Image 1 (tube, rainbow, N blue to C red):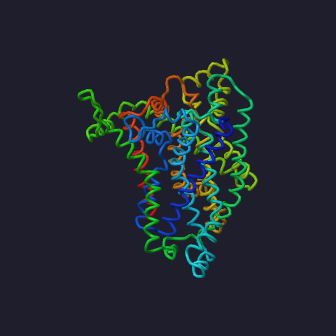
Image 2: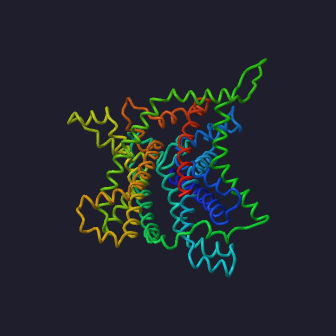
Image 3: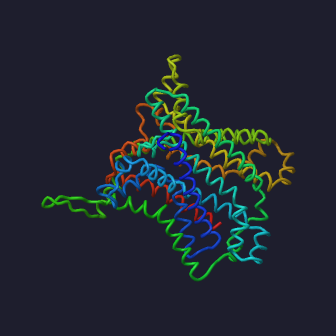
Length: 493
């Protein structure tokens, strides 16, 4: 039970099952049944789409310990293998729930067709959901579950905090201390290959729907027949807010309470309380991490620029079906490959004394982290741009044939203008992914560079105090507010 293989299995499958269950349940409640306050539920969950994993870890760690809401501390959990694995699964699942909800919501909006309408008339909403919608939704559910597996399996930040020896954590320790075990490396690569093959299988089903939603896309009115009334309606509301509380409200409340927590000694007794002034001071202390934030912003911008350019080239080169499938498979492998393996490859690439400029690039520039970040940013950017390009090609097939007589540069300008929104969205998502990532470049950072992810990772090992909670809360708000704005704008359009 304590072997890295079984730990990896429990952590990945547990995270995937829990996050997919929460995401699917919330999607059914807010999209199909449309329980009261369903817009608030979906907006709050989607607001945490771009929140870094270490912020979630900070939020949950802030609720435990001597000064927390619960007495079970991170150290106590690490002493028990079962509690440590449960803690890792829970934090990863809460971080993955917004993405899983997004997958399931997109699938539901593309699953309402004539067959669904007929089943509603014949059998009612519950039979329609169980026998028609859920079976049609299985590729999206599988994609949601696969995302949970991939993002959990390639990370070692949370497992390192709770001392859970997964395959990725074992490889990280081996790369760090230069004691490589070929067996662990092959296991880690096999995991990425398996994920890549599964992505190809799911993509073969999902991409048949790309571009076909123009005549089948469902809107809010299509789901009115699913709406329930009476006790079921309010039970669904309670269940929905329970999921939102666990994924969003409780973590944020942990950070708010911890950032304003005050403990003083009076008459040899500890008095604990909360002060809004201390909360404000903790938020203002985030300025102490300005250098770390600037390094993270630079890394995110450079990595996203490179990923966007490379993705645009790959989309252009993937016009043939066989080229597209090869590219998708390779990029899925890169997305799932554990961060320590990426670190090892970059270290081997720069481990040369001649020529001297290689050492300069490794030690004095961000080239190493930027290259490492492409394994996370490039697959996501390519996925967004490839799907957008497929929709553009299918929706404008006749117009594109008429444009064949135009000069090449004119056609490229028209295409780029049509793709401007997907490009901007892909760039923004890539930036947040790069800003939040750590495991991919942890061992290849130049000596003078410390990103905010690295600083938070160090601080998490020593317990959560006011300053760390204030920084995490600032990062959470910085990611949540723009996301909520984009969600609201999308709904208005």
